[in-house]
Length: 203
Image (cartoon, rainbow, N blue to C red):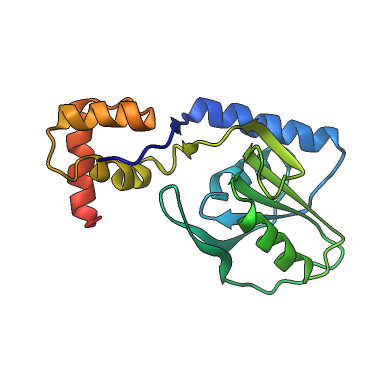
């Protein structure tokens, strides 16, 4: 049976709206970053879009791992691929998709600060109420639910759907379980397609 937790499937229109909202908050604060760090993998898309909105040319990626399988934290947040860049005098903005526990952003901020930038600020598309870390800028604040971002849809579905189908239930029943337990609206054909892809990935 599927685990019970609420999901929200975000579309590209809402992503753009929240991205613009985040950028407008940064501009209104008169903070002008000249260097951006996008946390891999969730922060990649937003960081590139914010570069466009804010006119930032320098963007690098920092890989921080915390969530292993969908909706399951994988131990403490850790930097997987560290970098060393001269940031003295730079105004740095660290970007991620969401602050859930907040640990990934805390670890990233502490790491970037070791490179002596002039200032470090943080931004996310969304933040969860009660997170250990509240970013300086965010598109909106929400109560806890697992947000399925448009760039992460297949990966998340390949983790969630097979659990609801683990007992061999027909696609129609799996779709019903996902609706009740996870607030996901999938057709039977979509369930079949996801299960086929999950099998290909050997999930």
